[in-house]
Length: 324
Image (cartoon, rainbow, N blue to C red; front, side, top):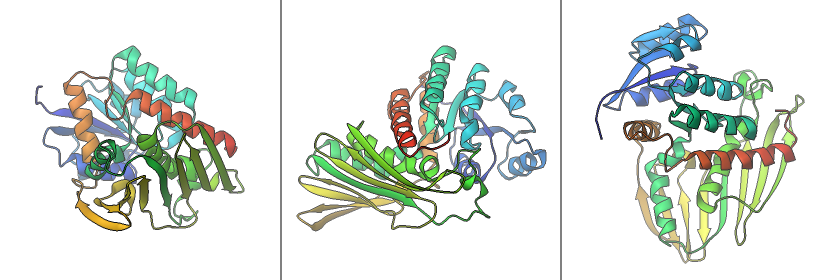
C-alpha cells in the first residue's frame, strides 16, 4: 500500500466540521486541501484556523478542484444526498456525515453513485471505528458474554430552540431521530443485525418533528430498548447483555473511552481505550486506507451496512410519521 498524503475537502463548516478538522490535523498523511462555505468569510476563518490551502464560497468550486480527492460533507441532513452525489459525479470520494440521507430512496441513490463512478463512499459513523467499540464487538463475537439478548442505549440532551435552531428546523431534517436517534439504532444493528420488528413512539413538536422517540427492536431471541431526546438528558451509558454476562460502555457511550465487563453481577474487568483526538481520527484513517487500497467501500461500515441502517431509520420515521 502506498503511503502518500490524501487530500481532503470539507463542505459545511459548522461545529462537527471543526471537530473533524482538528482531528484531521493529527493524521500524518492527511492534508486539508480546500474548504467551502456559502459564506466566504466563514470559509476564510475556518481555512485559516485549520491550515486549508484553498477556501471557496461555493461547494461546486470545491467539487471541481482537481487536487481534492475526498470530500467530507458536514452540511445539514437535508442536503447530504444531493451534495454527495454531485461530489461523486465529479470523481471525488465521499465521507458523508450521518444520517446519510432523510429517506431510504436517497441512500440507495448515493450508493449507486459510488458504484457508477467507482468512488469510495462511506457514511461517517465514527463510533464504528473508535477503539472501545471495535474491542467490544471483538469480545462479543468471541462469546465473552454469551448470546446477546438485551441492549439498552440512549442519546439525549436538553436542546434549546434559540441556541440549536437547526435541531428544531423541519426543513433541515431536525428532530431527535435523525440527529441522534440514529446512534442507538446503529448500536443495536452492529451487535444484532436487522430486527424482525420495530415498535416506535414519539412526542412531537408543533412543527411535527420528533422531540423524543422511544424504540423497541425485536429480534428472534433479543430485544433492544432505545431512546433519543432533544428535550431531556440521560446518563448515556449503553448496556449490552447476554446469557453469560454484560458489557457497559462508558458514558457518553458513542465516543466511549472504555467499558466494563460484568459476570454474575460482579464487575470482572475494566478496559480503558481512549480515542485519538475527539475520535473522528479513526474513521479518517479508515477512509484513507480504503482509498489507498482502491476500495469503494469499507468492510467495517459497508454500503450494505449504510443501507440497512437507513432502512431501519425509514421504518421508525414512517411509524412516528415524520414529515421528511
